[in-house]
Length: 502
Ligand code: NAD
Figure 1 (tube, rainbow, N blue to C red):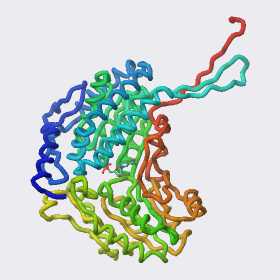
Figure 2 (figure 1 turned 180 degrees about the vertical axis):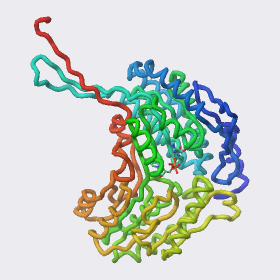
Figure 3 (figure 1 turned 90 degrees about the horizontal axis):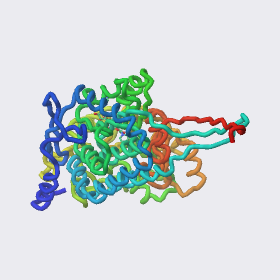
Figure 4 (figure 1 turned 120 degrees about the vertical axis):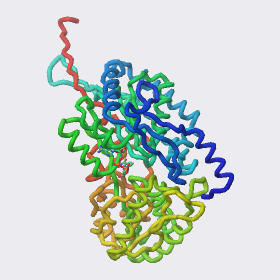
């Protein structure tokens, strides 16, 4: 990326779309905090302050929960087709203004407009897919063992939902939770990441414009412990749906689980991509580079471990280093990826690499912050590849959520699958092979929620379920029709018919 006069002009135009003050969204209005407390939101591309954001506290959480409780009877009894029409209309408004929301996402995250537009279109597809479910809200009808009795199942809403999300793909993360939560008849309080406050409010504004009644959806800004934790702890909140890190997920499972609230967790990954001796090496390198570095490695499905058969290890390594060193970083459409989300995240990455090297890892490329004129002040980390790391070393096991990957040499398929499954996480895995037999064996044996054959470790689609095993989640799947199981509960209905009354 380049800080040329033209790119500065584009940045200035985009910045004009971002309010200098970002508030909560409560009662279909953007409001500040009662305490007047604020925090700074910085642009990851140059480190400059983008906005002052209202820092929420218990008083705002309480107001939003009260609204959600009050509105629940009305919204849950609104016919689902009507609810889905509101969601569809909001999606149409988002589609009409997709460049505007993409510019907001690009500013918040530092990613290019091209990547931001891709993310916006994923959110739009999710909107249309979920709105369509309003006319397919199927249950089951079946027979009964009892004479003159009918049996069926219907879905019912869960209640008040606390939706807590991460910053990596902000508008898609919002869409994945808000659309199905509202479709199913729940009221909701959305707590976006402190790094991406405005995209969530902008989304809520489109829903309001499309006719969502005041109070059905609130957006609360602030830090996890100030705004997220009270949602997790409050007995009026029936469901917590969380996308974020494993430690926070464990706290939520324990705390909300203790009060028997429903909990859906979409957590991290340490996803492996296997390169077999019969792989198309060029295609495998391309997938490995995209998996490791696209979106600056800030994907739960990022390919942070590359497991390579011994006989092709050196050839693969050379090609991967060359392709990695050719990547360009910046916030323009011809750049490959942008900055990480904040300074703290960048510092943690650099420290993790330094520690791994001090413990014997070899740094093949990267491992440093970009501080040249074009990346001045931004949170840019060079794409980083390590080798000679132990499978039990922290760099092999901890999710870093940045542009860092490790290479592992294995003798054969058995050793590869063993390494793939030697992880606390179980989100995604990929294999590159021409063998149908290997590919099928791999998808059987990989202990993950998603398997990709001859592709990257990421790439979920809105009509397909997504989620992981072990420390990657707690068994729920988001997206697909499977997401309806998060935001609704089954009710079994028996009807007795009296033939004498006919
Ligand atoms: P994080 O856990 O630090 O924060 C996520 C959200 O939780 C934020 O909104 C934050 O404010 C909130 N939070 C923090 N502490 C809290 C607390 N005590 N109580 C309630 N809420 C709290 O995660 P992050 O660093 O922002 O995001 C990266 C993580 O998200 C990675 O682990 C990544 O793998 C994961 N992620 C998972 C998926 C998935 O679908 N599985 C998708 C995207 C990101």
